Image 1 (cartoon, rainbow, N blue to C red):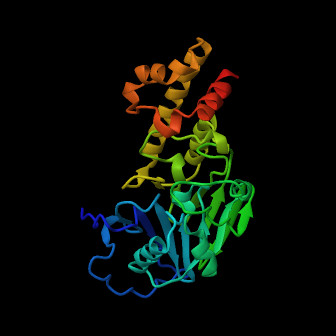
Image 2: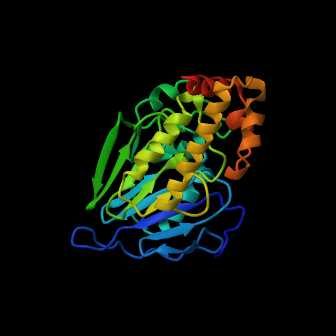
Image 3: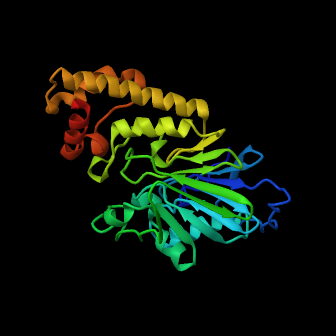
Length: 304
């Protein structure tokens, strides 16, 4: 597998080419990318290409139709980041981005909402993002990302060029505004940071919940999909890998709950979990687990 230049600011992008049919015609072939531009690393299957770079935020996924592109997540903020993302899309299709879905509010997934909105795209996000963006700040962005210009509560479906994408919000998990995007025509689901190769991250101050995290993974598994796109990580997941992730989260919850019920002090809680969870491959701590508001919220929900 090729690896893009480390200066390329477009992390993993998964392009889902719509299957040719009477309803969905193949777009014209794009021009070859310029030297040094982000290029395809290889075909995952007939519908899916993986672009891999370094930096730039979370993964982005896009579906190509005869009437335009449906994009999931807009990466870290910045005009150059936006241009890099567009350039990567243009290596697959000359079509314009018509719809954008945000999987959650974090700036490494929503950073360029503003540019897509200015270009006429409908940017779709879960309704609580509007309230979050009243106060949200991030070290990943010089200012708060643009609020989606289309908001939904629990489910929203768009149809473009004969293809369909549906966003589901079941509950708080990674954040309180998680959206899972399902492409039924190609049996692909984009799970945002509910699917992540790193230590699981529940953003309790913004409605995240470890119990909700597990439940949402269960709801993802009810969808009919073959390929799952993680929020971070260089490769798509199989359904079996999503099941394995949920099993690990459930084991973590079971062990953490036992520690809470045993009266483990909060200042010893993370170390106690780590002593039991070496088999899970996670070292809990840092910004995802150590901050007191997150620890307090976890302790509270596991105490119920």
